[in-house]
Image (cartoon, one colour):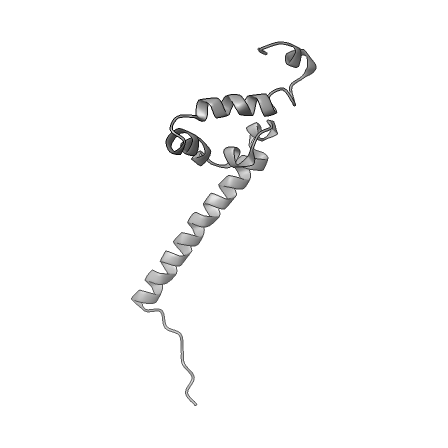
Length: 96
């Protein structure tokens, strides 16, 4: 029985580099999403997590739904608007 040894050839090295590059890109995207949803200074504001995660939400409402993002923002402000504001700001229309 002959023992096979593993040798890196240029194809194996190229494949390993491609795989590690893809893994690094995936890790970058996942960690960036985690940071945006849970650790960003804006994460304390209420709202849909998908909208906090990516800009695809805006793309969907502006491109697919043909420019209705402006009304979706108004709807989200009505739904999530004054939940976490201090009492002095919640009583006013705007806060400094």
